[in-house]
Length: 204
Image (tube, rainbow, N blue to C red):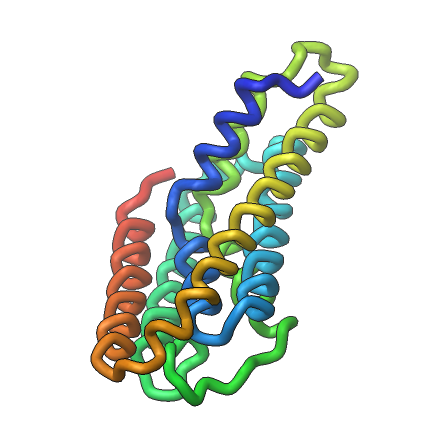
């Protein structure tokens, strides 16, 4: 049985702004509600490899291998810096402007998935988050981990969609001011760069 404590913990974790939330907000403001939903879907699917790794115990391998951890982390840092550039440059994939071309949903989801896939701390995070809520029966541990992970992913998708929806509603209020658009793009670029810097100093 799923405990209320787990639901509350998962809700608070998902609600806290992070890279995925930032990406979804950028798509909602820049392109509208439907692209934001694709962004939420991509970010949610990007969690799946980490949940599988935690369930199978591979997260412990990643945590114990400094070289593997550093490789994945380095790729993640580069990708976040790339997203910062996409928010900053004219015509970039994350640029917020009045004449932004709506992108392919699959392409949006792919970028969102990569954000989470290339974050090595997620596997370690799930390895620490989920076991305390298991029943302790080794015969059902894998099933319980999968169930808890599925609930976490469902919460992630639902909350990210809400973030994207509210961002899309605010879109009409920001498109009329070039100054606001300029500072929003700079702000998103700066936040992605800051998240890249934070990931760069993470240790296994």
